[in-house]
Image (tube, rainbow, N blue to C red; front, side, top):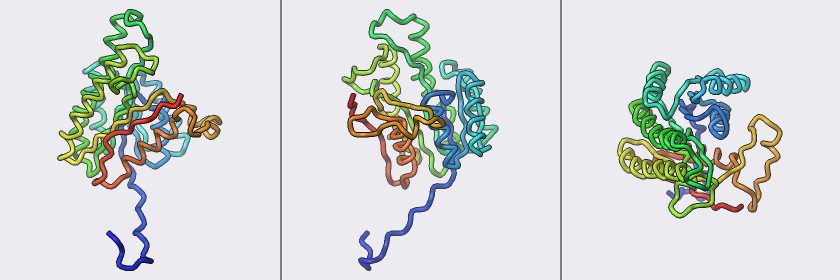
Length: 256
């Protein structure tokens, strides 16, 4: 709406209230990066990893940054019983969840279909697709108790039709397409309940250690590889939008 007085400034935007954020696959790589940045914002972080020691290590790093609002939990996304136990444990810690970040997935490389064992194929699909479905299913009651619930899915350009540029195995492609299909279905289903489903489809990207010297020196020019810095900023931008603004997906041009 145009102000009556042309000199009247728009009202200042308030800083977002601290959130309670659940992040899967946060024991390393981009999940760890997200956990560190949510904690730096003052959010309460509930982070999981298949290896509890890895999750606890990241929680200790967060405490080292001066935040004690962090919880480390174990969750094997390929094991339904583990996912149920994970959700039950979260329910003992908090009465609601504001943001669920479905980041966990098992990477599987190989251009030859026969290069992976049956067990690796099954684990990749189970952790990526089944795990995402079950975590979202079991945490949905806590999300619905929030006044600003968001589900953020870290998918991949491998989940896009016609994209064959990543070095992943076919099982990883299949799993990511499954995640993408789930996101497309959940978005209209959950929107009437106030839940935004936000999906990111990054190509291969640079993820330097946020606590190391390379973080501040990583180039971010137009011809550079996509960086974790930009992905973090996309996530934060999307969830900080007013509730009438629903950013369904982020797609990225692959430059290298």
